[in-house]
Image (cartoon, rainbow, N blue to C red):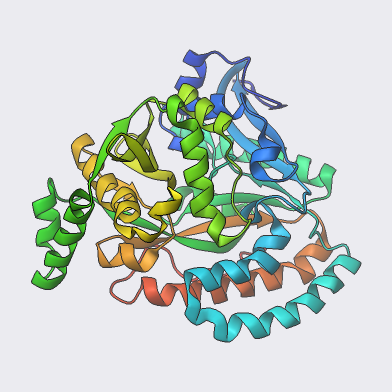
Length: 424
């Protein structure tokens, strides 16, 4: 068998049947429909910064069998999770304070020290200016999609993809990072660390394993007082005159979704994706019905929404938003992102729901659990490994420790405090 790799600008030249075969068993953000969306839109304005999307395409005897999307970016304005400097040095401070206000006792003093350290790293050209990011754009996850039946060749495919990406990173003189790897994906994590990538903690996602078959069984797991309170929350939106509708075509609501998204995410600052009405239209045309949108109506007027991306027995919350007047009406928003999403999962027979990291404490009280997400980084320059990697490792261990206190308070979670693997 002859194995080859190719770096391509898009997947448009691969037909749907072939791409479906490659992505059938991959995660939702490595699916053919999602790739078609990425190839149909202009990404930089949505990411608020320049970034070049490429794909590593693996072929066996000239037939495509695996694909890995990645970004090359040096942008200073790009969304903070796509910026090495922002994520590890600047934007994380406000983000952590928002997610965990108690962290202020160590965040503020540390930021003063980091400003000086960051200036020194720039002088040493240690690799702060950007990176090659193995991620599926507009999401927080990446990975390698490979055709079914090639499990015995997974290591070979990984080595081919990794080698191609390292060549890109060396040519660009930038770090290489596999971003958004779930703690439970042990085989992929072991391949990465075994190949010399350093494991760094990113954040805790909120996940619920659906072990019940209806809402009564769900509520039965709680004590009487919280059970009574949760029932009231579910009924409150109905009492306020709201109804919820599942849509697989939301083109007619693109302007409203743009406004709702911006009014919700904008209150936390500028560090969020830009999603104009044209994005919501293209999302509906390309990704639905794999993605659905639950819309909250009061009468005939839409007031909020949440996107649910489903693949196999899992659902991921993608985006959510509510109208400006809905700002003071928490039941509509929380009903959308939690209770209505859970109801939809039960209707579809889904076994796992990813609720996203935001509002973790509220989701945890209602049964969601935190699951660690990691990135794996490799530096082409020795100076980066010597002066930048130790800080990244220490920073992520501190983040894990602080954020993990809330996550591990009741029960052990997947993953353990990370330690940087030796770089090769």
